[in-house]
Length: 178
Ligand SMILES: [Zn+2]
Ligand SMILES: [Zn+2]
Image 1 (cartoon, rainbow, N blue to C red):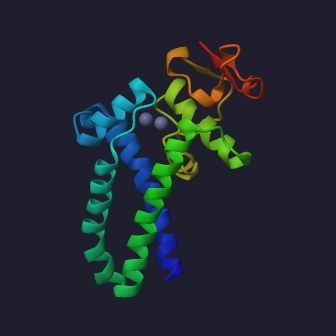
Image 2 (tube, rainbow, N blue to C red; image 1 turned 135 degrees about the horizontal axis):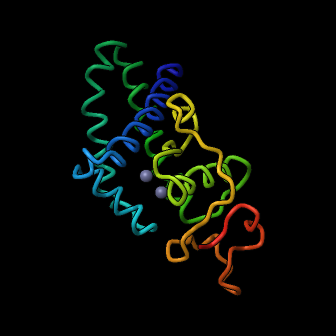
């Protein structure tokens, strides 16, 4: 069951990449519900799709995957797989929001923000993974950010020093305002 749950987590990281890259950033899918929400997230910076839409997405993942997973792996492993996948979808949603609302803690937290804000503010065609770099590496869309130039009107609150209106000193080597 642990292996099945881990496979579910791994499957989510792939779905996270594919949904973001194709439904979020391919012109052919711009008018899908995800595409519309994602374009708005990029334009407004601090906009996130409402929770009820995320719950519908989770219900769709469960509805589509539970039958085949149980048919292939049996009830226990099939359920563990789907729970791993949907549970990690929840982790992804939480982490993505935290990236926008809170400064990163530790090497992973700082990496995740730089990876994601390179995607937002430098090149929207790369760094589609949010929780991991794995699928960007596999599909050749991984870029290591240099200094990330953030538009002032989209700047995250955690990056800004309210006293100076500039990037906080601890982030000045890795982020700039433009
Ligand atoms: Zn995007
Ligand atoms: Zn984002």
